[in-house]
Image 1 (cartoon, rainbow, N blue to C red):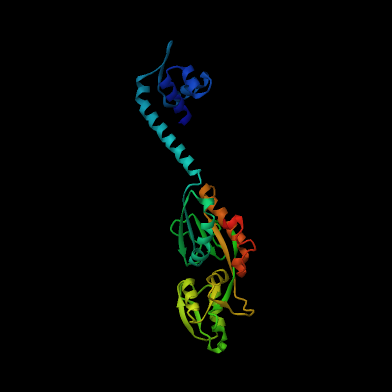
Image 2: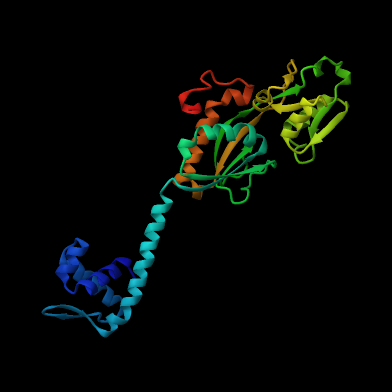
Length: 300
């Protein structure tokens, strides 16, 4: 059964003649006659009496009319829902590492509010590096190359790390240094494994489950921590240890479920995130802000 045949049936039932139904549908009257005849043949019922003064519903046509009207309402509802889905408004759920949300993403997304003014953005902090989607997220930012080939992925930037401590701490003899590391949730990451090797048996004064805790511990002179450049330098209370330490960097990837790629509001946020990470690529990798930090594009 074709919806178009039912639509022609409804128009003819309401207007009572081929010419009037044809004007309402903006087609030829022969088209109305042909589509109604096709419907009658399909259901094996005579739905109209062809009279000299017009077409009148038969008893069978009257019986089917309310069902056809119900189908029409559902089609209209579907059309409205389609229109709504095609707008840039609505909810977008973004899952990202906690270390990026608080100190990098939120202030820079706030500066770009005009680009997503109709979007209700939900942010979920995530410490795990798994590629799976978190809490039904529409977009996921992860550290490390994704392994799931079923997801659409964009490489956004590289996250660089350094050794950071309070200003006077590096003056201590290296053999007296203590370190601030991650607990079991993050201990497996490349930068933390590097720190375990670099410590060479020296004491870990504290282990934290969040990079924000490591930053505060370093500022409190508890020891030396491996931290992303963009976060440690933004704090303004730490110094970086000089030296060629060759700390592993991490790639930042944006993951999108293929079914969501054509939803406008999700595409708006994906494009904004891509632009943002591209603009601040050196800040993320080396801790160096772009020369036009207060450019019209990103800070106004």
